[in-house]
Length: 289
Image: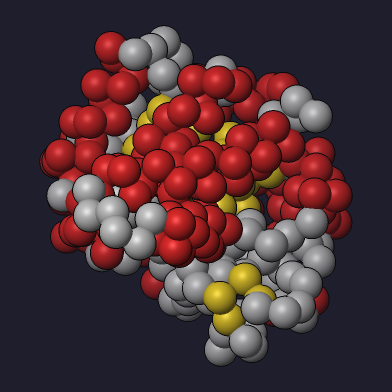
């Protein structure tokens, strides 16, 4: 079984992207697990600070380790959008495979200072843990939104600058970088997502020469995804699409089974709904279609 680091390097070599899917319950995880087993491709599972608290970090880390070691499924766990040193320490102690320290909205100097401290700490505890840094404002929250998040970098002049990315990676030593390249967390209710700046992705990739991570992928077009992968993106985050599929699946299950009270029976349609989204995205990101 390849490690998370080997999986990432292989994706970079093949010019494909590892799908990164956030979960907040076992129904969502079961759906993604079924998709991985069916397609035989790796996946990164993410938990935000709120999701990690709800699930219990140690419990979900142990469960995913079991899936990987006993069922031989290439599934790895990421501490997604971790905002403090204390939360980073909790993820390390719980046994996470990778950690995103999110200092994206901080001034670059402070972002570098804090990220560098975290890289040093994590490597002192476990050199196998992948560390990701974020540079630029892409909003927050996997929600259905009616307007752009305040401060989100959409205009060309607000995107992550190539020289800043190079400096950040050089001084922090992160394994992956999540830049602001026109991507935004969440999805518009009744409007298309802004186009990704593929040229900026390519410029940043050429400058930093490490895998790039695209956050806020929900709602972007297939053509933008494929172009971003070609330009240097090797991990793509999908959360809002999965949450929406979970909600629609549960609504359909409740409507179709108004007298059912067994939770595991109600979750069957949820799992099916989330799995469909996961399969569609994994097929695209791995160029299987």
